[in-house]
Length: 222
Image (cartoon, helix red, strand yellow):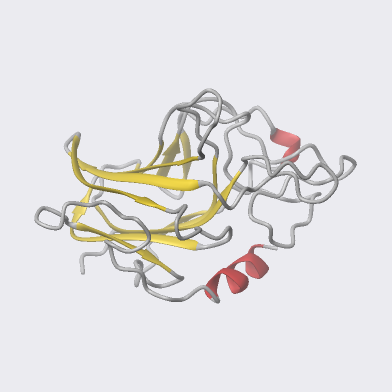
């Protein structure tokens, strides 16, 4: 299943430099470059997180300090991958072929108002991050694909020492397609990448519902 997702995502291979797709980083002080496509931001996969422990049998796992391969991915609330293979339609925030009996990805149950933070658990600096993008916003289609709305947009920021290095927004004009591999790289490195997926006219208005999978991180300097 992971391999299928990655192959499909790799087809989205165009490199998007910061400034495109609505990225709002300050061009004078911008240090982190936002990209799209597998291999566009990470050339050396030093660490990765696949979230295989967060399958539907483990819904409710706290996401405040999830650690895998010396990566810490954290946000408020508990995990939700779905409701199992007996409940249809399946929860599929990526719109890719999924096996509902083994699906595993990172999503906060019911969303939250916070950031999803990606960092190393041993304080190693990050030079590149890529992940598969999805969201849990409703589409209103209760009979077809009820989750994963392409009008969602991603806000992001990188931090060093608690201070913002760069920030931006991707989507919704033009649309940010689900199953896009989003990338972020920085020649000087950063401590944290924070991301969230919002949508217009949500309630509560500051709510976010980002789903992500197949996180790959480069700690080797460029």
